[in-house]
Length: 379
Image (cartoon, rainbow, N blue to C red; front, side, top):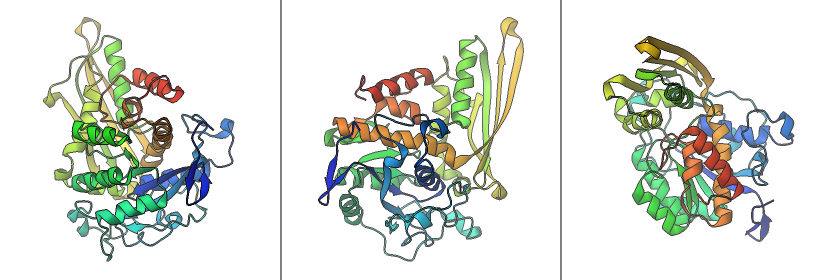
C-alpha cells in the first residue's frame, strides 16, 4: 500500500478513518457500499470508477465518528442509524456489522428546516432532545477518534452549519470533503485557511456518478463539439427524500441553483442568458422516496439554422449515485494527506463536484484526476 501507516492510540493503523456529519441517505449508501464491496474482486465490483486507487480499496475506509441531530439516530451505532427514518434509500447491504461508533448530537444552527414540521415524522427530521455539541466538543471528538477527514452531508441551505463544521475540521487538523452546496473549497478565503494548515479540501456539491448534472454537461459539450447552437434548456428534478422536502423552502436554494447552473454554463462556449436556462429541484413527491427523476430539455439549431430539440427522462436512485463518487473522493483526500498536500484539490474537485474552485471540461477533469492519482499532479 502506498499510504503511510499511522499510530493511533498505540496501534498501527492503515485504514482511512472518516468522520461524517449528517447520517442521511447519502451516508447510508456510502457506508453500505464500503461493506458491500468487502471481499469482492475487481471483476465483480460493479459500479466503481476505481477498485484499487493507489493501494486503497473501498474496504479500507472505516467510520471513526458521526454527527446528526435527529432523535432516531443520535446515540445509536452508525450501522443502525443509517437505516433509521427518515432515511429511505435502497438497503442493498442490509446486514451491516456494528461499528462501535455511536452517532453524537451535532450542532443545529440552520441545519433544521422549520417548514418540515408540517410533514409526517417518517418523512422529515425530528430534532433530538439533547444538548447541542459545542465547537470544542466536535473538535475533541474529531481528534480523539483518529479521523483524518470530515465528510459534510448537511441539508441544502445549511450555510451556517457547513461553515461551523469546516472550521472544526481546520481546528482538529483533518481534511474536508464538502458534498453539499455551501461554497468552502471554491471560496478563496476558506481555500487559504486550508492551504495554510496543510489540509486538503475537496468540494463543493457532489456530482452524481451518472446523474442529472453530469448528463446535462456531457450533452451540452456534445452540442458545442458538433456545432449545434444551444438556445435554451431546462433541467427539472423531482424526488421523495428529505433533500427534496428540504428544498421546498426556496429560500434555502440560492447556492444549490448557482452550483447546478454554473456546472452546465461552464461547458458552453457562450453562457446562456438567465431567461434561457433553468436548472434546479422542482418538487417533492413523497412516494418517489430516494428515486430521483430528471426531465431534461435542450433546444437548439443545426446546419442551415434548422431547429431541433432533445427531451430526456432520467430515473436514478439518488444516494447510491453520489456514493460512487464520494468513495473515490475519500481515497484522493487520503492521497493528499499521504503526500502532504494542503488546500483545495483542483483536479478531484473539478471531476467529482458541481462547483469546484476551477471548472474544466469533463474530459480534462478526468485526465487531471488520473494524473493526480498517479502523482503527476500535486492537486
